[in-house]
Length: 317
Image 1: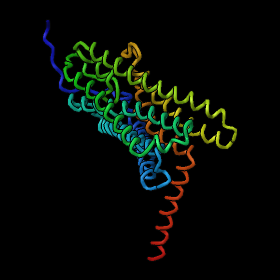
Image 2: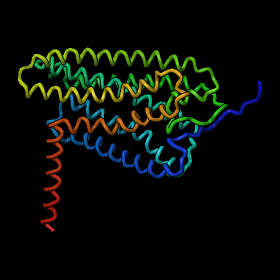
Image 3: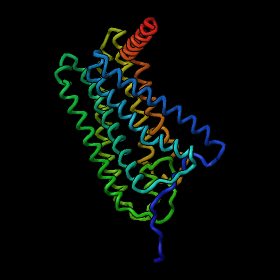
Image 4: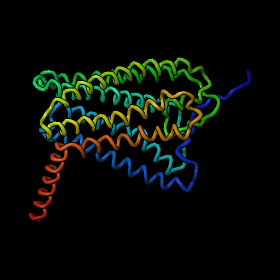
């Protein structure tokens, strides 16, 4: 066997090699990240300070906002740094760390969206028992289970990835260390790693999608029996917001992780990665807040208090 040099660092291919596109891409993703940060942080603040939002649905929505904040902060700042400095190097420990946290946050979002569908099922199909079933203690326990399962899943994939050797190409065809592209450049046998993606991802994905499907079948059956038109539209508004977020995140993730021969479609992989790692965290708070009357009211009240406080200080001076 010929000698092979073991790699100590990788190069991220980024989104484009064209110099003319570097500045437009930097500005676009900078604005995207700032909007993502502002919207998700605003949702967390509103959920914390507005007592009318201290209900299970908004507790989980606050968790989702915090998750999206971490999610985008894991990938976008690094991409902006690479675009600005035109350096694309990343060390193997930094890459593996990014793999762990990306698995952690993405798995958490998978499971959290399933828990949110169960919450909607209880609220709509069993409203008289809602406060008993979805008590504050139960909500915290469900959130802890979700985070623990996600951490375990991420830890398994990361520990198995530590044994991989990299001695061929040093270019990861993505703007961050996404696991499918990370595996593609390994010169080790990746059968176990791929098998774990399909087994663990299949179990968690199938269980989550099954819970979502069963919840919404029951919800739609209940909604069709509602004869009050205004109440029906309100229920549908809440459900369609959640289903839109589920569709965007689930199918873009499944497309990237469970598609055969991804190494032949680098451009498509990058588009899918941008969609679920950058665009989805921005769309989630917009979908929920713009379609939700409680959030609009809470935002208006907070904005009015800020304006009145500022006006009062100006009058004093």
